[in-house]
Amino acid sequence: MSKAFFGLPEQVIFCKACVISNQRPSSTVEFKHVSGEAKATISFGEDGICDACRYNQLKQGSISWEERENELLAVLDRYRRTDGRYDVIVPGSGGKDSAFTAHVLKYKYGMNPLTVTWAPHKYTEIGWKNFENWMHVGGLDNILFTPNGRLHRHLTRLAFVNLLHPFQPFIVGQRIIGPAMARRFGVQLVMYGENQAEYGNKAQENFKPTMDRKFFSAGDPRSLVLGGVTIDDIIKEGTFKIADFAPYIPPSIEELDQGGVDVHYLGYYLKWDPQECYYYAVENTGFQANSERTEGTYSKYSSIDDRIDMFHYYTTLIKFGIGRATYDAAQEIRNEKITREEGVALVRKFDQEFPRKYFGEFLDYIGLSEAEFVATVDKFRSPHLWEKVDGEWRLRHQVS
Ligand SMILES: [Zn+2]
Image: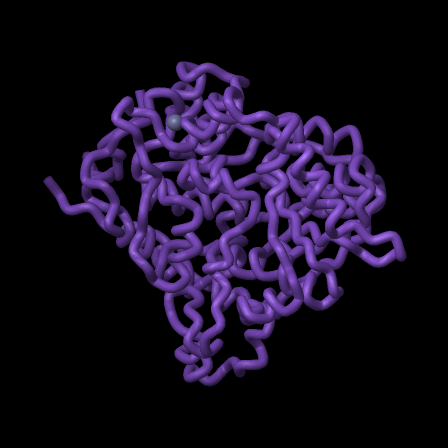
């Protein structure tokens, strides 16, 4: 049997309840990727059920959502201000999840949120409209942070070529912007939307409401790794200076301790359902779904604001055999929107679709030719997942 890349499990197993496989890295690990640590993947029980489904069983069963909401009220009361200043930072794009989070905090729970956005690589038209509506219709304040585009493109290219993970610099920026803005505005509470446990981190991670601070580094910023190389390596190329990296350098744990900044997930306190967030956002913040489905999946309303977003999921298909339809279907099966059989059919139909629509723009953005793109992608196809049949790449294992 051929050796698995990235420390992935050699034997591919699909969850008996949803459609995810044991090749899925946990989200925390995706971030650890930054510091080059080894990958860990989603855990499966002996019954063949994945941790995300196991968490979902708890979510539908033994967790008391009334108690959790009371915990939320206690937390909010601790941070609530009555002098007109902001009292909570909500990082997000104005997509359904952050739209819901910010809006309920303000209009249901009486908080005074400031929403902060790390700009997408390239806004889609519908994404920009939804972003504007978040403020214009939703009645919220926002700061849009757009990083130096020359540097961000360079980092995205490095992350694609070195890690086949073009979204890694974006994820770094997006995670830092909330706590960093909280420090800046003297706000002590940062509230993200859905809990990462929903997507297959260890189920026990959902038994605490706060985000792990491990990803904040207190060390020398020059040794931070972005796109698979250190900031120092990039500076040595001669184009960028340390000052260019300001938005990628996280506040240290000490700084956050000093400022008393706490990072929570609303998904710990409220029973999270992405479809319900969507309906809520349509109703309250003028959110609109796309007119056509996103390439690589069947859905029309999740993560639609970035023109290169589909290449994130295309790279997960290459590295882990898990494309966007798998993520979407797994989540919808857990929330009982579709059956597993329907999910399997959707995965087999859409998961391997190549994102044609913005391919040219993506190549242009990262400055690669089509041949370079293909050569890079093929380097990351693990032989335990992919085989070449009659000149065509084919997945060895598909969900059934
Ligand atoms: Zn599962």
